[in-house]
Length: 78
Image 1 (tube, rainbow, N blue to C red):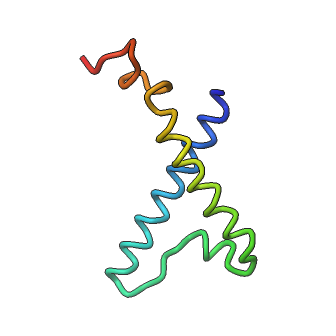
Image 2 (spheres, rainbow, N blue to C red):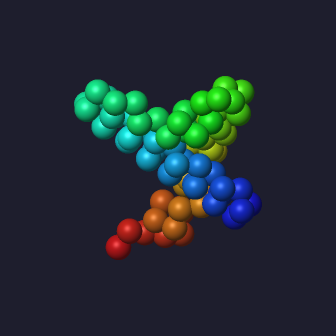
């Protein structure tokens, strides 16, 4: 399960950074969607990346409390 968590976490980070660039590009009148820049010529693969990032986010939301040292029942933030 640790490997699934790590892959999901990496995909969530990639998705978050991509959305950051999309938002910043929007303010500057540019299109900085890195996934689209890299995979734009392959729309099915681009859609697959978005689905994987979204599924990873759902997985992290559902399993976060069990995998996070600070949020789990045995850990505390202090």
